[in-house]
Every structure is written in structure tokens, then in C-alpha cells.
Length: 148
Image (cartoon, rainbow, N blue to C red; front, side, top):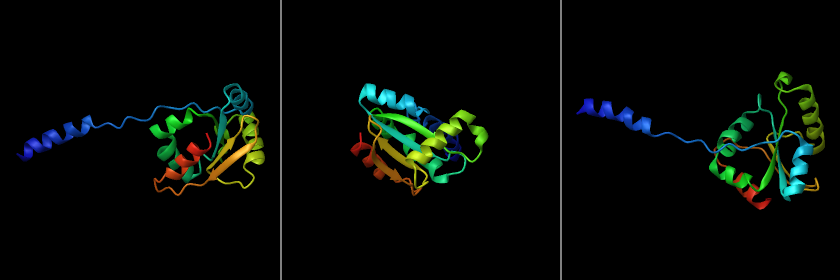
């Protein structure tokens, strides 16, 4: 009997695969995001991250951005990804300068992670900063639902 259990348990576990959420497309250029925002009359969701050094940013990606809930809510936004890595080699010089300019303009407190919602006219609608790394994303989802 133990032999059968040891034989079938791995087979059962193989059948359980977590299917990742669908990928969302993040733009990396502010002007492009604003152009699309105006055309589609959607707010822009700007995500400030430190991809290579910020543990809450890395966890937020897994806990929020890789979920089906975020995928569905993201359809209401134009998504703009602004990375401020410590390793500058991760970005081109042009992208680094672009991101630094937006960081100074839209992330004056210098917090990570930061979600900023912009209107199609470029005005800040709302912001939500931080992540407690507990897996609790309901506040982030409410923020996204409220500001779409």
C-alpha cells in the first residue's frame, strides 16, 4: 500500500501546475504612455520600482502584478514602468535619464514601490506607496479599482 502511495503521489503533484497570469504590457516611455492615454481616454498607472535592490518591489511583482486580478484591472489603464536600479548597466543611458527625470518629477518623496495614477492630461490623480510583503494586496486592488 505504501508503494502505491509513493508511486501515485508524485503523479498527482505533477498534474497540479500553477498557470501564471497573463502578461501585461508595460510601456517604458512617458510620452508614449501619455499619447495612448489621451487617445484611449484612460488613466496612466506609473509604477516606480527598484528592480535589482528593492525587496518589496520584487514581492509586489509576484503578489500583485503576476495575478489574474491585476491583469483584469490593468485593461483600464495605460501602464508605465519606471525602474530605478542600482546597477545602471541594466538600462540604456537614455532610459536611465528618462527614468531619473520622471523620478524627480513624480516621486518627490523617493519611495519604493510607488504607484502613481495620472490623468490623460498628465495630472496626478492619486498615489499609493509601499508594500508590507505579507501577500496582502487588497489595498492595492482597491486603489486600482478606485482610480481607473
